[in-house]
Amino acid sequence: MTALEVQDVDVYYGRVHALRRLSFSVGDGEIVCLLGNNGAGKSTTMNLLSGLVRPKDGAVRWNGMDLATAKPWDIVSAGLIHVPEGRRIFSTMTVHENLLLGGYAVRDRRVVDQRIAQVYELMPRLAERRKQQGGTLSGGEQQMVAIGRAIVGGPKLLLLDEPSMGLAPLVVKQVMEVIAAVNAQGTTVLLVEQNARAALKIAHRAYVVETGTVTLSGSAAELARDARVVEAYLGA
Ligand code: ATP
Image (cartoon, rainbow, N blue to C red; front, side, top):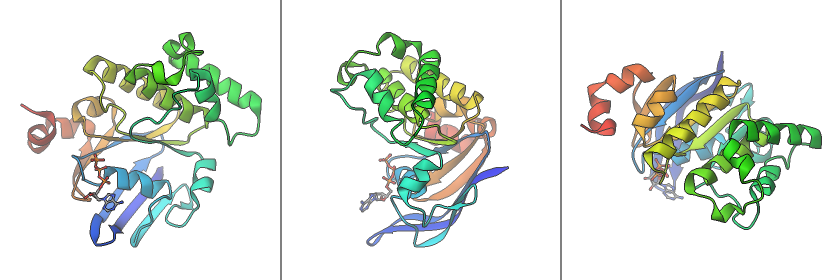
């Protein structure tokens, strides 16, 4: 079943035409990746889905909700949770306090505690560091806290904006494994990445986005073999 449908969307920042007839979909249970270089429109797409950027034209629907008009707060409450680029965890708060913040919209404290326990099970390294201040964690650990905090919010659709950014290859691999595990537990994932090599390993399908529009799409396996993708995103 299609969970998310973006259809012929145009977004402008003043005169800058950032998204041009952008169309893609994400099915329930999938990991879908949007691949693109700097300025392709990846962050704009994430902000569009979170209700922070509004389309001039086109449709954005998620499980019966019109994301083109819905309020950001209602979108989060419905379970569409965005892990922004650059992680943005609270550096003077502990790992545990950062995770608790992910549950701010969840009424039942027991649910929050259960989800935090689930995060610690999924990422034992965070359990070991639960009392450590966010700012003293490595980049990979901070990324894991950012993902963990989103999990505590109870995501149905998790939006991840460049989770591999600035991380060493081995750490990227660990972060991707966590994302695959979250998906295996039933969360649908939309992953935005410049790191095609890492993203295509865990994605089911992918779209290549260039200057605000989709130029290629297919299964992750197909795209990983596509000569144009290999040349532009996978290197020699
Ligand atoms: P990056 O990987 O560098 O973050 P991106 O693929 O996420 O890039 P966007 O940040 O979505 O790309 O930007 C898409 C286009 O819109 C770019 O040309 C960018 O310069 C432009 N843009 C983004 N935000 C604004 C803004 N607030 N005002 C004007 N132009 C903007």
